[in-house]
Image (cartoon, rainbow, N blue to C red):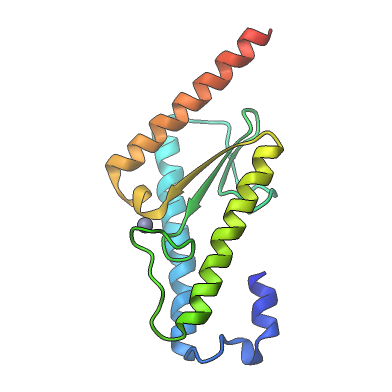
Length: 158
Ligand SMILES: [Zn+2]
């Protein structure tokens, strides 16, 4: 979608958004995403959690997939996924951004629904909660709890 949008726009720029701003936004997204993801992956490793892969080819491209347990995790960037706590709409060209960010939220909900229909457990974490040691720890605990429940349910079936 992003690629399509860039190709569709004249000069590959968002209308009325300065080239610098557009570049800055792209850089922020790439860097923040990588940082959040790395931090989360390191937390998984530290907690001796195995059996996951990254960038699964599934609706919405979940950041982490546990294929055995069918758990997917999305690490949502606060700006791009319009986090209610720290997300904000840029002042310049706000109509464009409002529409774009709302579209992302809508797509997130749709992907979550589709994945659940396919039998996945969908977990989402905000970028700000991954940055915070305490809430990251809580999320990892929740993940471990869910995995335990799933393995117990499997055992009962045997
Ligand atoms: Zn946030």
